Each structure stands twice: as structure tokens, then as C-alpha cells.
Length: 311
Length: 94
Image (cartoon, rainbow over all chains, first blue to last red; front, side, top):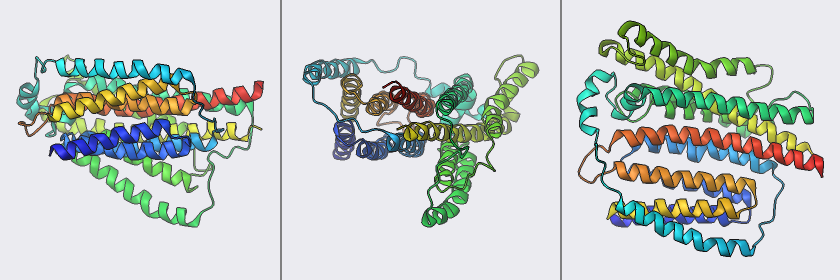
């Protein structure tokens, strides 16, 4: 097994090296997506299956799509070798040594909460401990995290709109490629992705899966549809995206306040209703995460398209 | 020993990313470097959650990494939009 570990980690680190040193940025981005797949295998090997699912959909998938959009607009900057680099390599090696020294010296977690989680799991409304931690035990973190996503979307959109003001163009929202193969592919893939997302969401209560993974799959389906030109401006409304994105945090807050009203504690769920409440939150969060990530892709491609039309 | 292999990978990713954040001149590559650094941190967390004996690793670091992944994707989007807007501004001024 140690052979597998060594192969996985050296491949991942090697890929990261090539991502950062390759002269061609487009190549870097594609290598980065491959790097994501290897990291997902590492997660699977470390039995963090929830994380592996999210990594494949997000790290290798959606982040890659974002980066590819940005790189296709980019003006190539020739990487220059400077003295700076060679000088900076020494502290980097020192940094690596320091990190290793710290990591090896790390004490084993003093307060292992695994036993507490196992004890409280029947009351949490989920059988998958990761889902229980995310939505019940540490619901506060997840609520704020979904809110961060909304803020990131607002920021990205504002930037896209700012570049829009500099250089007004036609109101076509996405740069659609005329490609029948792509259209056919999207026709098949988008419905399947929607079903996969629903399945991942549903099984999240008992097995690895949940709102994050399902949302990422949904966003990926949106990206495919957009690239194939199926999300046209007529059918597309920004306000709809805003509503869908805020729905996740809004539902979460409502349920949280409901717990406060009925039980006196914010974000507390009665064990008998917990399963249903978690499912409601997760469904809203899935839509929210999916639409927000898709909106991010959209805004980035819009921003880059405007910089592309720049002379 | 398994821990050691993954710790080494995590440290290598963090150091590699940190170096290129400072050494690279291309914005997109800096964004990539930050993502790789983040992955190194996630690797550290997940490695610490893992034990050879237990069938289930500690769920709390896993939940942390899950939220972290989504936030990383969101901040990458924001960084890219910022970068391209800045590039557009550069073009207009030059």
C-alpha cells in the first residue's frame, strides 16, 4: 500500500510542479485539472470519500472550467527567468523543511470528537457523520460558508459589470460556440447530471455525498449547457440567479431561527424533525451552491470576454 | 509511515505554491499557485483525520475541507475576475 501512496503523492506533487513551471498557461490549466484528479485519488485513499467527490466536481471540474475561460482570454506573458527565482528557491526549500519539522512534531489531536459524534449521530438526522457535522453539529460554519459564496458571486459580478461599462458590447451573455457535437453532448449530459445531483444530494444523509457535491455537479451541468449555448440570454435572468443563490442561506437562516423560536437555541434541530429539516436545508443549499458556482463561471467568462475584445 | 508520505506531499505542495505565488509574474499562474497551496493545507487536514485502525476517519476535518473546497473555488472565480478587470485597465492606460 505504501507503494500506492508514494506513486499518488509523487504524481500529485510532480503535476503541481509542471503546472507551475510549464511555459504554456493553457497547458498549465489542463495539468491542474489532472492534478485535481490525483488529489481526489489521495482523498479516496485516505477514506475521505466525501472530499474526493467534491474535489472531482470542484477542483478538477469547475475550477478548471473557470481557469480555462480566463486563460483563453489571456494575453500570453512570456515567463522570464530572473535571478529572483533562484534566490527565492532557497527559502522555499527551507520552508518545506520547516513545514515537515512542524508536521511531524504535531501532537495527535487532543480532543478527538469521534466518540461524541458517534454518540450524537442518531439525533442528528443524518447517518453520514460528515453530513451530520456539516449541517447539524457545525451548521454555523456551513451557513456562513454558503453566505461567502453569495458574497463572492456579488463581487465577481460587480467586476464583470465594471468591465462591461468600460467597453459596452451586445447584450449576449455567453460566448456560445456553434458546435453540433457539443449541443448533442449537452443534451445528453445535462439531464443526466441533474439526476446525478439529485441522487448525490439524497444519499448524502446515509453515504458520502450531500449539498456540496450535488451543487458542484449541478454547476458543472450548467457550465456544459452554457458552453453549448443552451443558456441563451432570453431564458436567462440575472434576478433569477440572485433569488436562487440567496435561497440557500435564506432557508438556512429560517430553519435556524425556527430552532431558536421553538427550542430556544439558534440552529438546533429537534431529533424527530432533524432528518426532514436537514433535507430541506440541503436541497436549498444545493440549488444555491450550484447556481452560485455557475454564476461565477458566467461572470468570469463575461469579464474575460470584454478584456478579449480590447485591442 | 503513510502519514509521513502524505505530510511530505502536503509540505511540498505548500512550499511549491508559496514559491510560485511570489516568483511568478503571471496572475493566472499565481492563482494556480494559491490553489495548490490550499490543496496542500487540505491534504494536511485530511491526513490528520486518517488513522490506519479506524474504519472511518474523523469527520470534522473532512467537513472543514469540504467547505474549504467550495470557498477555494469561489475565491478563484473572484480572483480571476479581478485579474481580468485589472488587465483590461492596463490595456486602456497603455
